[in-house]
Length: 349
Ligand code: ATP
Image 1: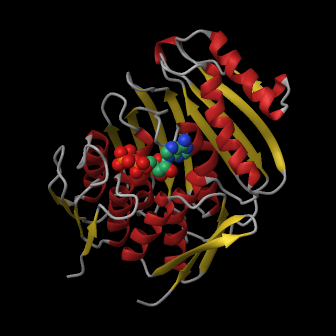
Image 2 (image 1 turned 60 degrees about the vertical axis):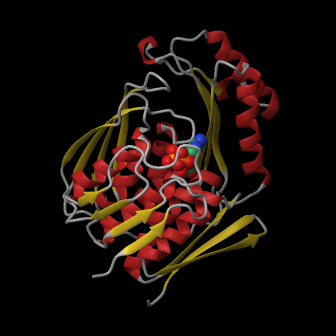
Image 3 (image 1 turned 120 degrees about the vertical axis):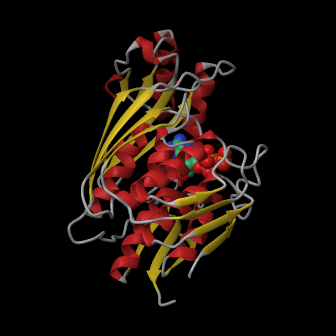
């Protein structure tokens, strides 16, 4: 029997290897064994958030699993058939809902039927895709592949209190995933910044937004403080949304006790400037997250697809390497005029 065996310490050496491998094990039905999980992290092995991903993957695929314990550095995962359905996953306090969604979405968007996934935990966590990134950046690209996806935010959840809620409806494409090229971002359509600031002083948001206005020369209509229920805090996410004709990017920085409003703004300004300095289609986070669904489409169609990105992170490189362990695709990347170009093409094993 074919099995994919992975060393979790290679490349980026963190939780992304686990999530990508779980997703692809379920999509292909190929069992997975992974050793040295998160070996490059100060606390290696499965943390609560990673364990939640394994448990969610087990729930949707009926997998036989061993090693699913906190701190475990090895895991064996043998998936059954992925079942569409109505699932609820409680990630626990502020564990990231969106990373659990990232693990189960590829399998559910290829399942036989419509699914609904309700997640509770953190919706705006550092080092994870914030809900608004998933909604505005990632989901529209899945729709372009033919997947019906709708996500709604019922309640914000910030670190450390958590308590956020996300509801996602997934309708697989009737005739399979479609690959596409994404080489240019297109004309700018709508550029704006928002400061989410439940249970913290509004003046912090005003200082953050003013710093962005000064940096980008933006007017008041581009600066927003969305209404957020006070009991969903305390928390602070400063988000910059850049909607272009072919892709929308969302860059986020998070308030911390030790940081001034100006420092929080400076972090996101640096990310936006790096993206604007390149003219590639996607930024560093979409670059690693787009690879998997696009590779699934390429694998199914036996075609090829390409995208350009402003940065080629270790996450993106590692993701491409893991993808090639499961799918009959080749993922290559090289520098190009606009930044980096990633080519994913089908090949016979
Ligand atoms: P670790 O094992 O390092 O503790 P982890 O399992 O919590 O990590 P990572 O392996 O670092 O997570 O993966 C984080 C994922 O979240 C990546 O896909 C990354 O692109 C995404 N991500 C992180 N920050 C953002 C952000 N600001 N916007 C969008 N996506 C983000």
